Image 1 (cartoon, rainbow, N blue to C red):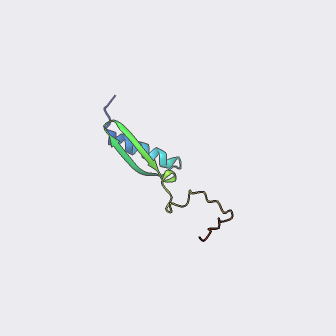
Image 2: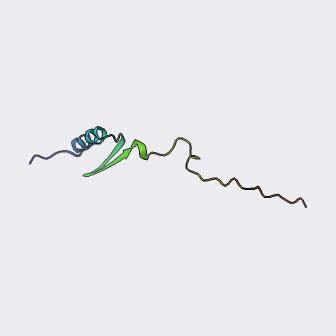
Image 3: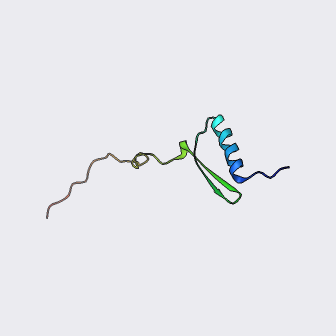
Length: 64
């Protein structure tokens, strides 16, 4: 079996991921290790998108 470079393996994987409907945003190659970042796993544009807010009654401050 022929040796395949990490870059070629990454390209083959990107083609397969995108053909199955998972768009790849970036690939990190570290030696033989490949790490893929997908578009649906990225951080939201607004950092408040995933915060939970409690809209209960506000506490009154006492003036002293």
